[in-house]
Length: 177
Image 1 (tube, helix red, strand yellow):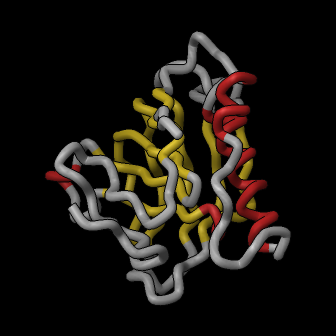
Image 2 (tube, one colour):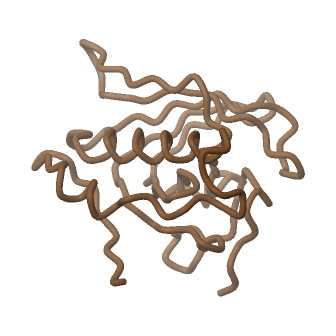
């Protein structure tokens, strides 16, 4: 497979045969969270799909398990474009995260994407700290706090030692080096 180009797409990014997204240059896959429902409005059309989300050093990518029923197989949510994110714990229903992803210049959407990720299976004790840490890391980079050739790899090994939730079914990606 060939590597994807950063910022090239927001809907249906390149995927490997496993359904996971093709990594971008200098991208680190951090965790995969199964049992997620994506609810979002893509250029005026509402999509609600069940699948999994991959959290990386650059983006969160929702990958649908229902790709045969929709033209949308995956949705890219670049961390650099996410705003208004909020974690919700409703009295009735499952934990969820909402936010808005600004449109990608040169991407295939004309409007910002309001989104919800519903966590249908288990807790979010790994997802939340990793998501917030990676988002803060990206925001520091975007604010000019790091060299402009690209964000340095986040301190994933430190995050792994600090957060353990036995009810969270997330799978961590481990790299050597």
